Amino acid sequence: MEVCRSRLLAAARPYLQIYSIFGLTPPTQFFTRTLHKRRRGILILGYACFLISISLMVIYECYANIVALQKDIHQFHAEDFSNVMGNTQKVLVVAMFVWNQLNILLNFRRLSRIYDDIADLEIELNKASSGFVGQRHWWSLRFRLALSVGLWIVLLVGLTPRFTLVALGPFLHWTNKVLTEIILIMVQLKCTEYCVFVLLIYELILRGHHILQQIGVELEGNQSRDSVQELCVALKRNQLLAGRIWGLVNEVSLYFTLSLTLLFLYNELSILHIVNWALIKSVNPNECCQYRRIGTCLLLSINIFLSCLYSEFCIQAYNSIPRVLHQMNCLPAAEEYPIFKMGLGEYSLQMEHLKLIFTCGGLFDINLKFFGGMVVTLFGYVIILVQFKIQFFLCKILTAPK
Image (cartoon, rainbow, N blue to C red; front, side, top):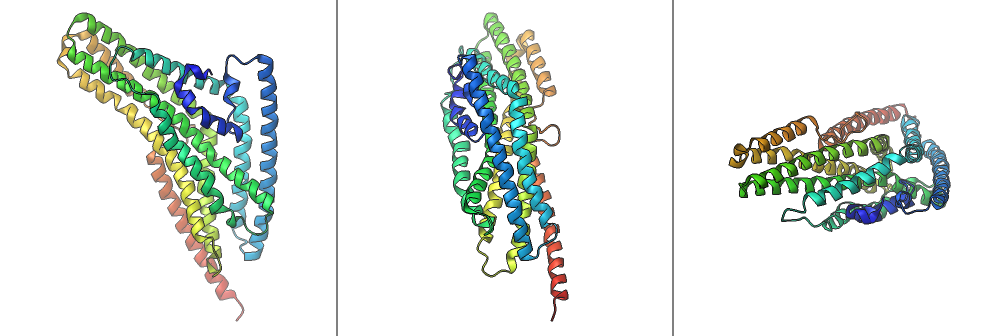
């Protein structure tokens, strides 16, 4: 990946570097074509050792948190499914990090193809738009990335320790608490990495959509046969680029399939675990973490919501292309030139068959509909949990010695 070839990747590079520091994705230097083969091998070997050390740290910290959780459960006499829920939560964290290292190894070439496709598509779109007016400015992506991803990363890093540090309990050493907070931040940053790629795809779709609108403007203003033939060529090129963007979405979805599936399961289970402990400690008048637990639940929910929201933006922008094609088809010039009308029909048929879907291996689609269903399901489990806890407290009161 040559950053000089792609302004989009240059805008996303600071975020990709942050993710590589946390061991979530390989450094962008590994994909540069000018890097010497021997130096690249040394860097990859060093980064592999770094990833292994991160995995060992995660395994040790999860073990330390399980031991502290057992002491908390024994202290509050909460030997019900709190134990299973907490242990499952820690196992999911280990599974996420282990799979992330395997994903870097197994899908290294796929990630390289994704970078190359983004750079090639940007170049092709710039060439396709060179003959039209009203160019869009690439630097606006930097601002949108900073507003959509950069600001959220700052909030995650700043608010996660504030909301979760006290809730880790008194049985965990302060060094373990610090490392645990770093792990919690690393887990949530995987979702922002996905958001960066989605926003890059969104920018490509917007540029293709803009070119298509310019073709419609040129078609309405020009009536000569030569200009219409040039517009037919531009329309066909835009159709091919839309198909390549659809393929890029499939590659990105495959790359993040298991990572996002585990992350969404972890966040949902964490919210249930937080609600469970809020109910357990609600009888304690000196409890000080109830409002912080609400903040933690909001952070976990918003992280999922943003990934669904940005995916929905891409889908809506992609689905707006058939509307532009329909508007062009209604122009008088389209009726006068059958070859252009045939091109519009072929493009519309492609858009009808190639539906843009961000999916996790077919398990679920990443969009606002999925987020709404997840919230409803989560509320249902919370209601069941509250009813179970109320029954458990009543049994304890009735069986308590008078």
